[in-house]
Image (cartoon, rainbow over all chains, first blue to last red; front, side, top):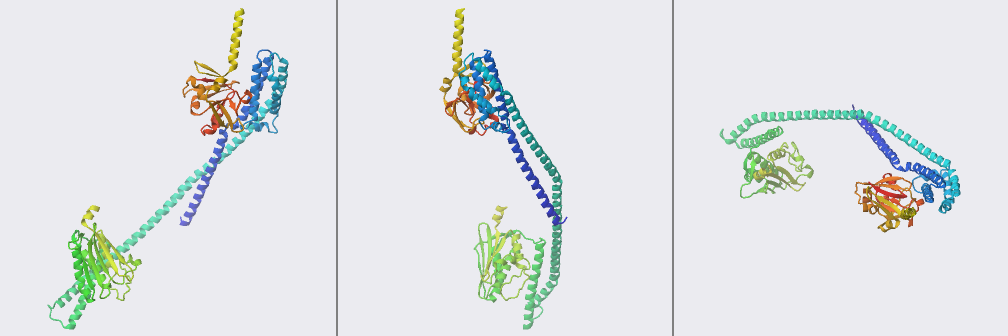
Length: 456
Length: 153
């Protein structure tokens, strides 16, 4: 399964799902329309009104017949007449929809005929007196002639209603068919959707496995490099120890006095031997950091004292180039918890860097301060400074940032990486505050013991 | 014999007089009240402008509230009123309708007393336009016209 087909399948499944959903929304709209039409009793109202009219016509005729026999009075005839009249008006008025049938050109005009009869006989009814059987007979005959037509009107309305009902039933049937089609589609889509997700899931599993493999390879390569560094470091250090030991013995004079030229050469060899030792120590530190084997002691250390020792170590070197090395520190001890040798390494590295990059006859300022939660070590110089864009890179291993000066690089670019790793192993942070041409200021902040306990 | 005849005539005349005057009978199992037109119009009158299926447009009706008409019989909300028309059409109206809505027993339509041919003399009118929950489908059949009697049960 390629990524390309995976994408196309995704597209098809999404389109199909949307289509079915759209169809369902459309159908539910049509269904609720139908339901609304059935709910409004408007559909049955005309049948009810027309059959009521027919019924009241029969009752009026019966009342007339009984009146002629003397079995009911004028009041009863008038009541039946009035009720019949009201039914005729109901048919003609209102929003119930019955009028549409009456005015239909195909409908029998029984309603119009009834209306004319009611108007013509209204005065007769109002003046009807007991015993006026002739008037009653006349009305009986006139209204009686309408019975057949009235029945036709009722049948006409029923027929139209039946047609409408049939139409509605067919519409519902069509909707049912559509619902069936969509349901089948939806059921068919379920396996498609499942297949789609299965493919997607498998693809992401594959990708994760690929990533895992690459990561594993990278880790193995890195581990091999670290092992190599450690091995090389140790292999170099052993013979170097013999060399520097021999040079020390030569310099001490215990093997006889040296001529001036000899002493010069031995001093040169000694200095370079120390430098080589420093480089190898850096490589070994890097391999320790990368294998997580860097060991940090946890004992109270006076950071001010450590800084002072480091300053003293570099005083001579600084003096060579007329650089003043100033230390500002509180009178009392600034205690942190950590590894004295490693912290000395941090201070020494930063001060060494500063002295190296500071121009002649400038100053390097070292300060130790404490805040409520942190002990701060600051080393500032007036050197060429570091571009803001490089601030992160300088802490990476083997970084060689162009310092803008012409001095050749004298290290492996590991110093600041090691410093940062040591500071972080102490639970602290290091940052640089610098811009090109503006000197550099490194600030190390270490948690104070009390603050550490509180935070823990 | 003659006395009997006179008494019978008197009773018939009296019955006729009261019968012609009475417009609406309201009863429950035990009591019965016959309202004359004057008595109905003496109750507080309520005007209701509303539509229904049997009028061409919004129409002003006026008459007493149904709850006032049945009040003397003190019906409870869970009882129903069987309303009967002059042509014996009958429908059941819950007493709660009379209490929840301003249902009126309309006597006047557009300021004129309704004749029987105008669905009078009395027409039960619901405030359909004022309450969305009074749907035509549920209410239309309760708009009984040519109302003749109310029986609470």
